[in-house]
Structure formats: structure tokens, C-alpha cells
Amino acid sequence: MKNILIFDTTLRDGEQSPGCSMNLHEKLKMAAQLDALGVDVIEAGFAISSPGDFAAVKAIAGVVKNAGVASLSRALKKDIDAAWAAIKDAKKPRIHIFLATSDLHIEYKLKSTREKVLAQAKDAVAYARTLCGDVEFSAEDSFRSDRPFLYEVLAAVIAAGAATVNTPDTVGYALPQEFGEFVAGIQKNVRGIERVVHSVHCHNDLGLAVANSLAAVQNGAAQVECTVNGIGERAGNASLEEIVMALHTRKGYFDAGFSLDTTQIFKTSKLLTALTGVRVQPHKAIVGENAFAHEAGIHQHGVLQKRETYEIMTPESIGLTKNKMVLGKHSGKHALKDRLTDLGFSVTDEELGDIFEKFKVLADRQKNVSDRDIEALAQKKAVSVPESFKLVRFVTNVGNTITTTAAVTLLNERGREKECVTSSPYGPIDAAYKAINKLVGGDGFELDDFLIDAVTGGTDAQAKVTAKIRSGERVYNGHGVSLDIVDAAIRAYISAINNMIYDKEAARGAKNEKS
Ligand code: KIV
Ligand code: ZN
Image (cartoon, rainbow, N blue to C red):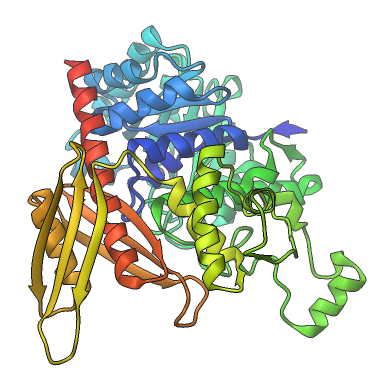
């Protein structure tokens, strides 16, 4: 049985997609969970792209215990140097070089020629090998590349020392059978391919990224590149959980295995949602809320008689356990901790104490506290960073015949309280956000997205707010949970601002360290 390597690019290709950006603290949490999941390689970022990315790749390289840690790099010396500087302390560092090989990219994007691309690819890999023993080369837009030219480039980078060659379907254009034949063609025609790992990296523009990756496995690919929840550029990347569970459920068919722990899948998916605020659709395969729910009576009856009638894999196999005990105001910390674990959250004692306090407040107001409520409390905790600004209090004055006003008081790091009063014709949240902008000196960022979610439905439900703020190219998420919508919105905004400050400070630190 062959072993398929799982190369996770959630923190690079996934993180660079709109709405999915994470700060350093969030990336470290995600990297630790990916390591616990047991992926073979974590692509931690694109070190040269920004001081923040460099800092994140370096920090991840320093903490990952088992997986390889890769940094992306163009086929340029300065990129390769930055990638190496960021990953050199990793237990298993990998430099991942990419260069486009399709005529479309060569002519219009690179403004180069096939001859120059061939030489550049060879030289880049040879140079990277002088620094790092593990070099991967990706021929970007492989699937739309001229085949003999692609074969020539791949053979050249193998000769120059690449240990892995990746042939992406960068624009998600391929169909499964075609992609299988494409991989088989490479296996047959590229000199030296038997000595290296052949990897694929499929995008989901036609909804076929997973199908194409699996077709590749059937035709000789030994590594698949994928992301948790399928996040990524445009329509996303191939979804890790779908590929892994297809290989797991149809092991006999593929005659292939992997070394990842499937029972960590649910937890990993939940953590990513908590960190990015980007939820998966309820019917998403494997990790969607309905993936293991049986609504129709006939299905429920069948599953009760024999599970396999309507279930091809068990919820337990992805780490989902069904706990029927109802939690309320008499429940203790142990019960809460057990439920958190069932829901996929591992918390420290300190975090548990904090969540428990909020749980008690909620349980006093609601008879039973639902799993969704507990999840909302835990998600908020999962993403907290040092607070440069803390909410002390706020008052809003709202009515349909008056101008809305908001008075917000914040405490800054130096322990000073400051209040600001503002008004707005657009309601209490807008008024409060204006006040916060003034208190934090809010130039240089703007609200990018704002999502309100009633955790359980009903007017007495907890409100969960995700606020995303943009500063230049970067988007920072903040989360707030409260029984009051305005309170949740204010907390979400302050948490996004704290995330931005934390990230910018980390990036400044990395810049100073580099120079
Ligand atoms: O989609 C792609 O081709 C990529 C490469 C950089 C691997 O992300
Ligand atoms: Zn990609």
C-alpha cells in the first residue's frame, strides 16, 4: 500500500484568500493543531511577501514538532534567502519554489521566454539546494502548460536536486479523467520522476479540486496539497478533510494510506472557523453541521437498525462525539471541559476558568446552555491576544425620534481610561464604532466586513459578531459574544483592533530582526 503525503497549505494559499487572514497568534494556534492532526508538511507562508509573513513562518518553524515546515518562494535568490532565513530552525525545513510554465503566464505575467524559464527554474533549485536539503519545485499553471516543455522543466529541476515536483491545476480547469491522464503522462515521460515525490495542487474553480486530486493519486501522485475546509484563492483549494476521508473510506479502492490522525479533523476544522470567522456551509462534506445528521424518518430508522444503512463513515472517525447530557447552571467545570473537548476545543486551565465564568452568567439567564452557545464562548477565547484596549463600559441612547448617541470608555495599556461620546443617524453600533475610532486614533484602518449571528435563534439568544477591519492589504478579524448585540459588536471591533496592533508589532519586531 502506498503512502500519500498530506501537504497542508491552509496558512499560505488558504490564508491569502479574502476573509481568511490570520494574525501571528492565530497562525501559531492553527499550526500547532495541524501538527497534532499529523499532516506531513505545513506550508507556513510566503516569507518574502511581508514582514508579518516572515515573522509568522519563522515563529511556526520554531514550534512545529513533527511536520515539515515550508515557505513559498519565487524562483529568485532574494526570495529563497528569505524563505531559508525563516525556516532554517525548523526540524524539517523545506523551500518551496514556484515558477509558471504555461505560455500564457510566461508571456503575459512573467514577460519571459521558455528558455529563460527553464534556466531560471534550474538555477533557483540548485541555489536552494545549497541551503536546504529539502526543495520542492512547483510548475505553476502546469495543467495548461505545453506538455513536452513541462516535462523538460520537471526533468531539469529534478536533476538540479528537487526532492518533490508539484504540478498544480492553478486555475481549477481540469476534469478528473483528464487530470489523471496528465499525471500519468508526467509519470511516464519525465526523466528521474521515479526518484522524487510527485505532488499535485488543485484549485476548485469548477468544484473538482478533490476529484482531480484523487484522480492524481490513482495515477501516481504521492503528495496532495490541500487546505482545511477547502479555503483558498477564488473557489478555494482541494479540501483536506474530503481527500483524507475519501482515502480512508475507500482505502481498498485506492490501495493507499496516510499517516494523519482522522479523529483530529473536526477539531481542526472548528478551530479554523473560530480563527477566521469563515464558516463552512451546513451541508459541507465531512465537517458541515449536517454531514452526519439524519433528518428523514426513514433514514433515522435505518441508522438505528444498522448504522451502515445510511452512514459510510462514523462521526467518531473525524473526532465528532455525540454527548446527550444537557448543561445548565448546576453543571460544573468538569462537565464543561468534557463538552468543550467533544466540540473540538482543547483549553488550558486558565482558559477553562474564563469560559466557565461566562458559561455561569449565561446559564443563570438561560435554562439550558446549548452546544452552539458553548462553542461561541470557546471560539472567542481561542483567538484572544494581549489587549491594547479594553472595554470598560458603554452607554447608548437609541430611539426612532432621537439622534442615536454612544458613550464608550476604553482602558489603554498604560492603565488610562478615556471616554468619547458620539452620535450617528445609523444607530448605536455606528455611533459606538465612531467613538472607538476616536479613542484608538483610528486612522489607517476601516471596517471591511461585519457579521451578526444569533447563536441559537430567538430574541434572547447570544449574539456572535465578527468584525473585520482592513489596514492596507491586511484584514484583521475580531469576535465578540454577548447576550446584547451592541455589546457583542463593540467587543468584536475592539478585538479586531487589538489583533491589528498585535500583528503590526510582531511584524515590526520581525523587520528589526531581519535588518
Ligand atoms: O495554485 C498554485 O499554482 C500555487 C503554487 C504557488 C503552488 O499555489
Ligand atoms: Zn494554489
